[in-house]
Amino acid sequence: MVPAYKRILLKVSGEVLAGDQSFGIEPEFLQSVAKQIADAAKNGSQIAIVIGAGNIFRGMAVAANGTDRVTADLMGMLGTVINSLALSNAIARQGIKSKVFSALNMPSVADSFTARAAKAALDEGFVVVCAGGTGNPFFTTDTAAALKAIELDCDVLLKGTKVDGVYSADPKKDPNATRYDTISYDDVIGQNLKVMDTAAFALARDNGLPIIVYALDDEAGLAGVLAGTTRSTRVGL
Ligand code: UDP
Image (tube, rainbow, N blue to C red; front, side, top):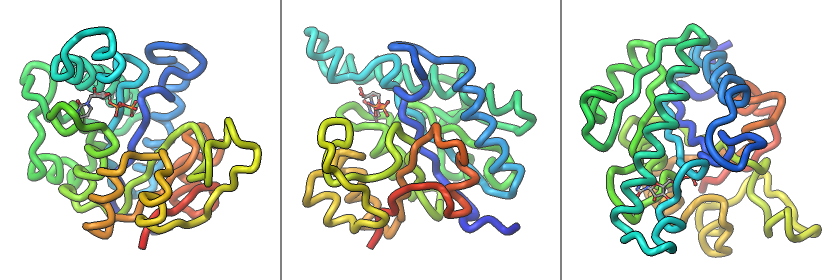
């Protein structure tokens, strides 16, 4: 089967990697995410990944305890490097080549990110893991995901998260919250629906990048999202 999207950018929230733990990486869940990714790669998709670090450090939370924000955000970005190394290695253990590119230069840890090198790796069949967010403080990995998706000419941004789409309100707090099948960029921004940050949605809107939000632990997994059978919300025009 020819995949619906040739090149995808998958954003994985750091906090989901913790699984049932409150901190860190849950090895079995990491491996199950890696297997979903490897299976999609075996099916012909070119896959780039951006991971957050909510399971390790979020700059805002660290800054709230007195650390200056720039330092705190660097700590957060380093957290994404840890997660990227773990996921890239887990993907390799599923028999698919994977390479980490970092927006923060650390040559003994990962290749430095350039769109040119990352696109070449995708064309060579590597799953590319983009570490270090945008490389700048005061940004998030959601924005990094939109940016990398555009820089790498991806056809779609998939946001794998804890919920199965975009809701009219927080489904954990409001029993009347309803899930959208599709929603426009302007509605998601205008209604301040918190599934990704506004900068990420604006970047996607201005560059015509569709976003699909789905639950990372859905049994049908990434394959189901790519086949259009997994419950999700499509954010687009
Ligand atoms: N971060 C940053 N610049 C970026 C991306 C991330 O400074 O371009 C820092 C920021 O402190 C953030 C942390 O890294 O809180 C982890 O990223 P994020 O909160 O997006 O992780 P997620 O919520 O997806 O787990």
